[in-house]
Length: 450
Image (cartoon, rainbow, N blue to C red; front, side, top):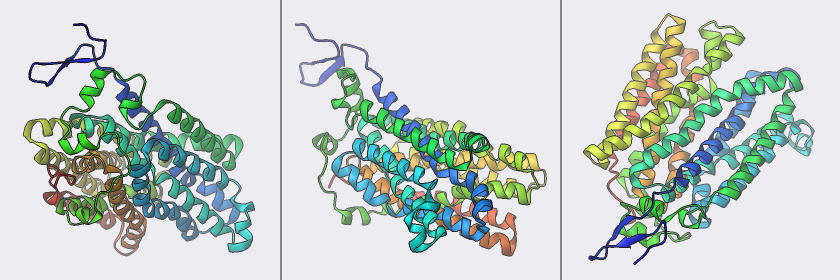
């Protein structure tokens, strides 16, 4: 009896045999799109920090005022994580991501005309910038919970850690490219043009994603039966029963009563605090504390993001290798513990080093190991609930970004009273606390299975 290419045969016991053709690799192209989208979020997240100097000079904003404008993004981003994740669980992540990109790209363009918006007459110039940045954060909030939802449906259990790490690699890519690109654009066409160009890139990416991606691999015309079988290998019965469905209901009470969920979200709050120091204070630290010039600060300021690019995929690979060797719970825990221990030690050593070059390299490596570990947090969301991973990812990222929102405030408070070394020591301590809380996380417990 003949079989069509890409199909599988059944053995006498009724179980599927190996597919008769090699699996396609569409799932990795989908992951590449998510990496691009992740890089785009950091382009639009960091562009204002680069253009901020020009905006401050033009409108005479003081440092405190500029800090509130910058923090408005994080607040909007944090508060909308759970609704954005729930939208993906209910309506599907592909469309939610598309509309999210278009939303934040539109408000990125509006940033350039914030001084001329009616909001200026109603609330003042500062509030006009602040509201626009808040709305950009609202749009970007949908990205990672729904990207994780895509990973949940497109990747087999054994490849989730690698997939989430590749998406987070976009953080490093976007962070490394943004200073160079935005500075070059502003130098040639002014700060307003940089926001128009970022917005245009967003529209292109949104259209490309919309026309190529699907929420489920079953819907994609280029996925063959062999790849489908590989993707769904190892899925539990609850997952197979719910496969391909949106809507549904996972009781929030079950989620909030889970010790693993609380361990996950509280630990992510701690690990995001030191991460946000690199997004907010690192450049200023290099110039004001380490005594680097403006150009030197820009060059060395990209080193943490380069470290993130290099170490994040390694973190995902290590997580999956450990899971394969010692089981899902211990494998995830050991991967996190390795990353946070290296990050905390390097952060402490860099803060106490008197040699600038060595200090910066140590601090950059600390950032890389921070995200080396972070990839496992996102994989754990899928381990705990594949079909409702968008909701759990949004909940986790909301707590994490509230920690990130506190980071620039807490760092400034400690630095002004005890010094910058103490501020970085505190971030290193929180990194260790993040790892310690993982004793509560059991990724072998599926919230969907009663």
